[in-house]
Length: 433
Ligand SMILES: Cc1cc2nc3c(=O)[nH]c(=O)nc-3n(C[C@H](O)[C@H](O)[C@H](O)COP(=O)(O)OP(=O)(O)OC[C@H]3O[C@@H](n4cnc5c(N)ncnc54)[C@H](O)[C@@H]3O)c2cc1C
Figure 1: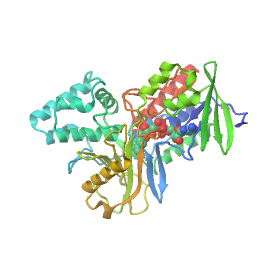
Figure 2: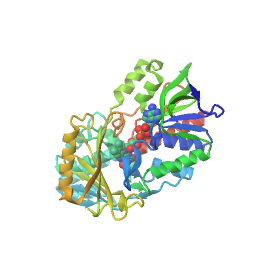
Figure 3: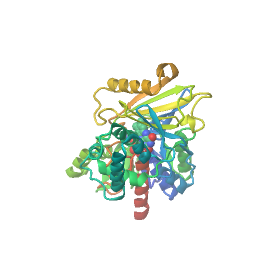
């Protein structure tokens, strides 16, 4: 067993360099803490990164940053440029028709696709649920909406928003969670990072290094050890050698279930282990990158409803520099499987996605080239759990925290939720120690 740089003392070890891990390491470095960040993969950013495929900065996982929210707040607090370019042209596609929503428009669309009485009823219900107490989590969003309308285009509109934003279908999302999220996130604008998401993680890595922190990639954490209910050290494998780092604090970005696994479930109460088991319900997401010489539509972000599976097509090259080879455009397609919690047949799911693409973009095969197709699920999911089933950032072990999209409070999700969990963890650590 080799000790890594035994003279160096770390205030905290962060395990995993996803959004939560990168933000936690950056915030702690900003507050004067010496951190070590260990990442299994060769690159940073986890499920919110980019990989260069022949000059195309293809998103590994997410790419759209909620403008002005937690990730950008962390950049502002630390003085790191976020590089986010807000989407200036956004639309909803419903059954063949584009609705420009660059300056908002859910209510306008409802009025356009429904009879006046029906539109009024739905808008009133939405307003009351958003400003008042709202429904509970014991009813799905779809069932909640069915109380006011069965209009397929209104359902399509919300299915598009929910599945593109939250990686579940509207029948799988607890209604209460939808309204909590809308209260936090409105007004909602997304943006893309110039040069690809990886460029932000590189800026954060430089910031951490400049403050005495260490980042080790291709470092796989095997065990997080505790002694008398407190954190003692982290063991990991790097360059075919075993290492360990002593530390009083571990911030795990692995997801609450994997955190328990790394510590050993005997160190937690059976009730805690069961509760985490019950809460973690990873979602699946179908993801396609394709390229075209053509600017296929007028919008850099389109949500799609009344489709088989596809819920969004983003065109980052319409807004951000440095993401494509000269003269080309890059498109990213997101789609929710029919059952986002249990995919039975990935081939069948992708076939439905391709049927949608042919419908939205006629002659797709002739005009576009597929760069990659990925089904995110299981241990490399869309979200680590359905919104509303989060585990929170605290654990029963002193000095052990979770960050990431399953460790945020209710009302947060995705990259925004992962960044929020890092803010909460850092506030706790700075207050306590
Ligand atoms: C296809 C897709 C599209 C999405 N689109 C968006 C979007 O547009 N906007 C948005 O806000 N959200 C989006 N999301 C959700 C968002 O990407 C995630 O919620 C967010 O990236 C989760 O970050 P995290 O902090 O949980 O870390 P994760 O991304 O889960 O990172 C965990 C890290 O830990 C590392 N690790 C694992 N095991 C070990 C080990 N033993 N030792 C060391 N390291 C280890 C992993 O390699 C990884 O880097 C999308 C997700 C997917 C999959």
